[in-house]
Amino acid sequence: MIKDSSKEAYAAHLSKSQTQRAKIYKYLQGRKTPCTRQELSQAMGLPINVICGRVNELIKADAIFELERRTCKVTGANSHQIRA
Image (cartoon, rainbow, N blue to C red; front, side):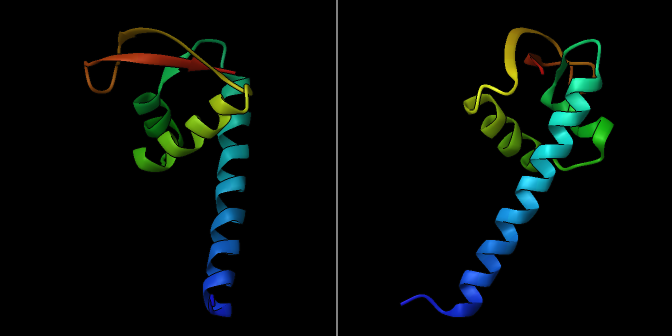
């Protein structure tokens, strides 16, 4: 049996992640060029773990697309680009 407080916490988490997902999607729609997850994290001021989770959800929903790799301007690593 799940406690009511656990259900409420889960519902709040879902609501927050939906809001973050919408903000990320809107930001990507406004960009003219693709960016990496780290570049998106830096631009939006959100932690990378939040960005990665929401970006992966958006990719699975076919709302955004993952493109070829290039050198990330933040990390210098070879990373996938994303775009709406």
